[in-house]
Image (tube, rainbow, N blue to C red; front, top):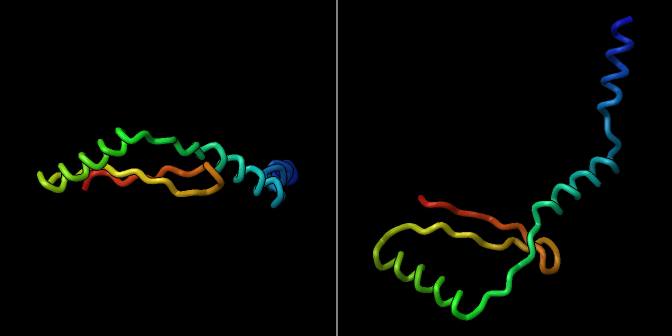
Amino acid sequence: MASKIANVFVASLFVLPEQCELYLQTKENEILIRKPVLEQDELESFQFMIRDSAREDYAIPVSWWEPVKVNWAKLQHLGHW
């Protein structure tokens, strides 16, 4: 008798492929962020940080955009090493 009840609970854990795909797409959309518009002074400060780190020989954290959709991207990070 217990095995039938256990099978009902196990069967309720199965998900249709369409449901799984929709769930994964929703989760992926939650981590997407809009690509910001950078001003010239912000770009110059990035250039200064990169040059200074190369001159003084220290590591800096780097983040970059991995495009997924138009104007939407995943933000990737590379920390200090």
